[in-house]
Structure formats: C-alpha cells, structure tokens
Length: 219
Image (cartoon, rainbow, N blue to C red; front, side, top):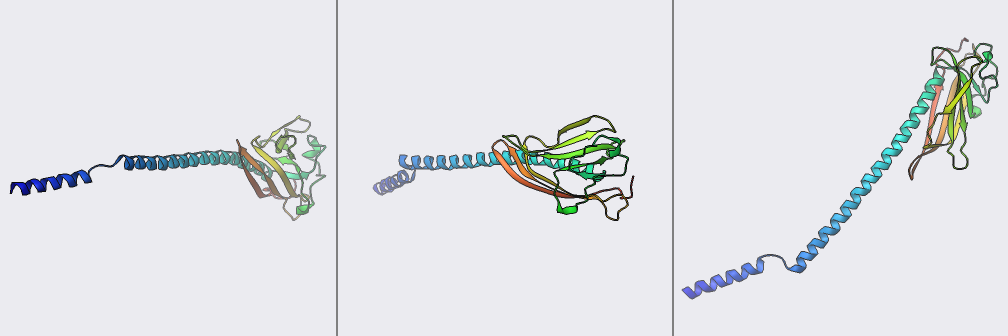
C-alpha cells in the first residue's frame, strides 16, 4: 500500500514539474513580441499626435484668414460707390460727394484685383481700398487695405492677410451701377492660395458674394 501511494505521489510531482513555469526560450520570445508591439503602438501614437498638432496649426491659420476675409466683406456690405482699378482721387472730396465717376459697371465678366469704395463702418465715411499684391522672390502674396479718413486726409495701409498665408489669386467681379439704377451693386469675390504652418501646407479656395446693404438710390 505504501509503495502504491509513493508511486502516485512521484507521478503527481513529475506532472507538476512538467506543467509549471516557462522555459527561457519561451520567456525571451514573449518579451520580444511584447517589445515589438509596444514600439509600433508608441510610434503610431506619436504620429497621430504630430498629425493632430499640424492640423490644429493649419486650422488656426485658415481661421485667421477667414476672419480677415469676413472683415473685408462686412466693410464692403456697408459701403457704396464701388470703384475698380486704381483711383487717383482716393482721398479727394469728389470721392465722397460728387456724382460718381469710374464706377465699375463691367459686371461679372471682368475680374479686378483692386477695389475702392466709401465705407460706413465708422461714424464718418471713410475711403477704403483693397488690393491684391502678388508674391515674388519668396515673399507671399497678400491683400492690402488702404484707408483715408476724409477728403485730403493722409492714406494709411496695412496687410490684411498674415505672412502664413500666400495669396495666389484674388479677383473681384464688381457690378456697381450708378445711383438710381434698378440693379443693386454687388461684388463676387474669389480668392485662392496656400496656408502654411512650418513644413505643412494646405491649399484653399474662398468664394463669397457681397451685395450692397444700402438701397442704391444715391447719397
């Protein structure tokens, strides 16, 4: 009886020793596989974070551009006497009071890169000009804004768009009939370019339509 019990115990111990733990080779393979999976996972996570950061930077640049364009559109909506091309009497009294000359009445058939008008965003009428300046020699293209506070006042200018935006093309399709005409003055704007943030670039096209808010009955 004792021999049988000892034999059974010996078999159990042998089976237990066979089932318990891993061999060194199995352990090394498991660690290697775990290391490879972790390295791939970390690389993917860092790639996602970098891509998200770049997307956020580009989004911030585009949002700034949209804000600039919206401010220009708001200025145009409240203005009148839309003129296209360079206006010699930009800061003269005739720009505000005399019967308008040089109004852009070509309609939507001719694209302009320069538009001037009388703005009413401020308490006093203000002469405003927006002009597209093409880029050259590594300098990005931009849209500049010039203002004159009144007849004979000095003209001041600044860039409407940031250096992170390269304006490739800015076209104004202007229809500005004389006061009293049945047609309401309007402007169709088409702007294209590239937004940059570090080494990341994103092309964009913006188009919008502006109709003069005031009735076209003369001022």
